[in-house]
Every structure is written in structure tokens, then in C-alpha cells.
Image (cartoon, rainbow, N blue to C red; front, top):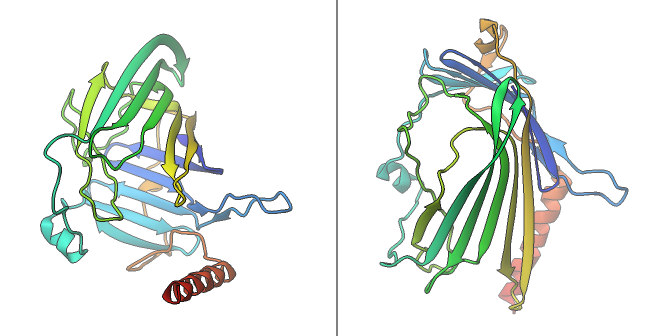
Length: 280
């Protein structure tokens, strides 16, 4: 399948191959997206990357197709432990509120609309997620609306982590720069959560934030994804092999090159700001 996505002025594409206990994803990372004065975009692309998951080997093979290099890492990854957190100097919050400080309500509505997409019956589902700060919260109100079309398609392979049938998990993460205790969220579901495979989806998030001078500013962000190609049939096994002539390395480059002029200007700006603060 081929998947296209766009968000914040940037766009990209992924091609995914699945056969039995093997999966491959081809993609390119990108940065930039802002418009220059001449109307062109400053988008910069990284090398062509292929990520191959092999359950029979218990590995993910990450290939830089341009440099003809690859590295291998274990799969599935080992669970994150307290020792890993200590090695990365991640400290758990010293205190967490005893009562919920943030209400997160998710309403899922099946509109009843149906259409055929790639030989599958697709259903139209609207999902609205409301984040409402309660007493003691440090968060801002936020609403996220997802308008999507979904099909029943299992794109997992045998070594992916198993999901319990009919179960789903909640995840909420937000940093606190001023050292205050993090929010304790309370989750409420209205309607049955959608667990199908999205073939077309648009997500709109609306929220607000406070500027240093105390004024509030509204912000709206939109992200979109769509499957443009989905074919089911025979697939050559060599798609999941490392091509001849590739070298194994400890690390491969997956990101776009950094423009040294931009990096120098940013470093100089940060240095000036530090000096100004010293003499303020």
C-alpha cells in the first residue's frame, strides 16, 4: 500500500509491503516546509530509507538505500525498565494529584455512511476528543475532531505485540517546564472506539495558549492521511532481503542534512540571548 500524509505545510509518502511474518516500509524524512520570499518551499529531504521487520530473525533491518548501508536492531523491542529510565536520567514526577485535574472525553459516532474502497466496505466515523481542565490543572482546553473512513484490515505481523480483543489503552503525556506536578487525567468514552484501519482521515485540533505578555492566542492545526494504493496478491520475497553490496554499520543517517548556515545563525542567536540575560 501507498500512504500519503500532510501536516503543518509538510507532506510525505510511505510505501508498505506485508507478507506473512515480514513487513517493509519505504520512506524519506523531511524538514522545513516554510515559504521563502520568492514563493518556493525550503523543504529538505533525507535519504531513501527502508525499514524491514523480520519475525523469523527477530530483527528490524534499517537500510539507507542511498549510502548502501544498514543496521540491525532486535524486534520486538525490550520493555522499558526503571534501569533504562535511570540511564537516560528520566525522573518520575515527585507528586501526582490525588483527584483528576483534566477531563478527556472521546465521543465516537458511526455516521452510517458506507462506500467501497480498495475492494473493502469502508465506514464513515467521526471521533471528537475534548480536553477540559479541572481544578488544579496546568493544561489548556483543546478539541480534536477526526473525520475518517475505516476498513477491516489486519496489517500486523506475527511478532507485533498482541492486542487484547475488545480492549484499548489510554495514553496521555505532557511535560511541565516549571516543575509543577503533572495533570491526572480522567478518561471518558462515549460510543464504541474505532479500531479499524484508516484509509482516509483528516484530524483538526483547536486550542489556545498564553503568550509571555499574558494574552491568549487561538491555534488550529490540521493533519491528513490517505491510502492512495492498496493491492492484495503475490509479493516477491526479495523485497524483504538486504540487497547485495550493502555494508552493516552501527548507525545510519535517516534525517535531512542540516544547512550549516542555518545552524550557525541559530547558535549565534542563542549565544547573544544568553549574554543579554547575564547583563539584564
